[in-house]
Length: 241
Image (cartoon, rainbow, N blue to C red; front, side, top):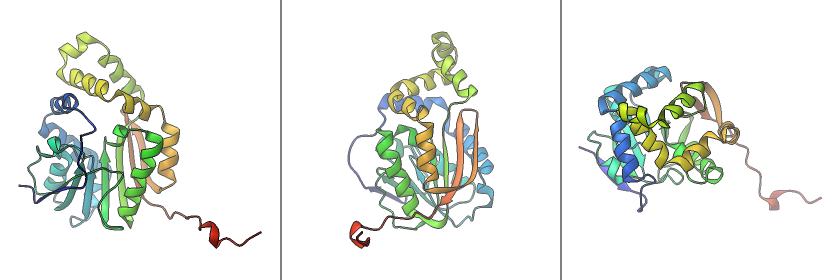
């Protein structure tokens, strides 16, 4: 059973029940856990300390947390806006109903923060992406890792979009049909994300030092450490001209 369920915020999920139902049809839990295990291995999780404090943001029903548990990690924390999705998780991680732009964790506390497919749900990307990345930067230890996997425009993703627009393919493939529903339900934030690569890279590079970056098969795979950010001193501290 869950060791803790904490509510930082009260309110509605960013994604409606139709999106959540499609998400749960898209892949079985075992399929997604196997996918996450392969992906995390690719991103270097095999050499992380099993005692690391790991936060999974936009964790949904906790399948990435289940994957991390199976890999031997135990100090796990999941954050999502949807109590409905969080209720589907049955592992031992601590769960938090909360907003990734206002985390309740202490400063310099986490060893690893992971986001897999959550940042593209942010409304008002130009405002909220910076807030979310600021929070991740604040909570990570100076030598901590930020691991990010998000959709990205590649030939593979263009092909997937083409398939989703064909009703006959959606009827023939439950997976494509579920993906089409998810895209339709999140289209405003999803296509805003895909059309703002320059902004995303700028916000990311201003806060994190890149250790790994690969775009392939419709995904942006990134691992970075917190950069030292030079804050401008208040105006009163500047010498007068």
